[in-house]
Length: 168
Image (cartoon, rainbow, N blue to C red; front, side, top):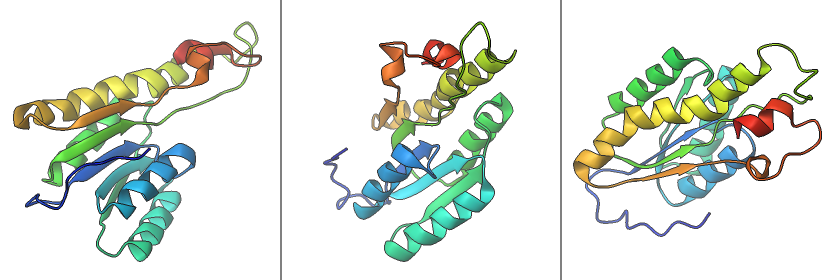
C-alpha cells in the first residue's frame, strides 16, 4: 500500500489506527506507515506481541509513537474500549484500517458450534463497531480514510473455508 498524504503541514502528527497489527498484513501496514512518520494505534489479543511490536517500531522509527491496547475483536465491549482508547489519544485519525480477522478451518456441517458466531463477531462486527466509534470524529473534521480488509474468501469459497467464507 503506497499512501501519498501530506503530513508535513500538519500541526499534529497523524494517526493510523489498525486492528490486528502484530502479524501479517497488519504488521506490514504498520511498518509502511511508520516509515512515513505516522503515529500508530493498534490492538491484538496477545499483549506480549504488542509490547514487542511497540519496541521494534519505536526503535526503528524514533519519531513514531506506537500506542496499543490488548483487545479481543470478537467481543463488542473490548472493541468499544479500544475505540475509547483511540479517542483518549487526542490525535486526529487519518486512517482507520479494519484488519483483524479470524480463520477457523473446517466445513460448515462439521465445524464446532459457535465457529460462525466467533468469526462473524471478529471479521464483520468488529469493523462495524470500531468504525461507528471512530468515523464520527473524521466526519466532523471532514478528513480521514477507512479501509476494510477482506479476503479472496469473500469472492470464492474454498475447501475447509466453512464459516470463514461466510464471514468474509
